[in-house]
Length: 209
Length: 209
Image (cartoon, rainbow over all chains, first blue to last red; front, side):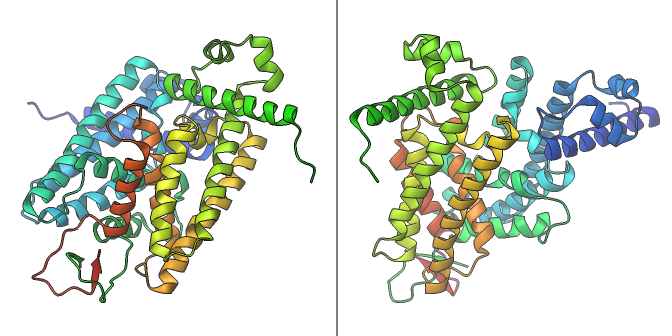
């Protein structure tokens, strides 16, 4: 494959910068209320110029979700390839997910708003979301198979996990008390170790930490 | 307070039946695509009659969310009043939440779609959601105080928990393999006991079950 030219790389960077800003506007104003005018204004860009990159709000939302899922999938793939125990891989995947949805795309809660997309675009995002979900589930399954994780229902555990991991996009605001990494670490610990505290008086068949 | 008359009780029941059907239509079609026509049709009710109970789709969505939050709050209040250990209360609260959102209002994923509401109605739902969140958080805090739960960040743990508990409204379909109760029990066990399996070879300071 030929290396992308400098101009092509610039165009990709510009598109990503626009998506990041659009995601921020969607977060602050809600997708329905956000307008192309407002996004152009926040970018300090002529509206015509914005339309050169993205022809409408649906397209912006689609590419926000698409870029976010690409980043999530490539993150979980790198983690799966590491020489680590499955529970450690899962811990890293949880942190990577939270950092990705909160940090890299400015809290792109966008990525869960599939219902706002027209049907053809929605189908493509759902298909990619299913790919990501399958990768995370594979991590959980290999952890169960190796004995590092408890023999839970892997599908349900994955859905519970992803539900929890996407939730911070609803309440996280940049500059808050906790960084995306700190939230990710706390979530990883919650999911891996559970809420129930040590009970030394009761014989235990499962232990954590 | 005077007992409600038979006619008043009938009207309340009728309203709840309408909300349940509307929630089902919102779930199947998405809130944006659902129409009052379709809701009236599924109720086998004249559209004018539907408008007698609810004057528009926003009002239907508002009362779906409002009724769902009332049920959640009254559920967690009953559980908090029980003579049980805090971890057992939390287990019951998790199951009650999942059953409520999946069963009682036909999977009213509606309850998380606050952004579709006009601002004044949205504020009222968010205020009630904050009340519910505070009750669940109080359960977590009292569990930490009693030593039944690990010393986690109660606010973050509550938000993670509620994020996970609302997620099934996105994928649950009535008549699937798992009942709402079974999903609730699995979620409770995941959150209380964690995903990490027993590691008898490593000295443990926290144990579960």
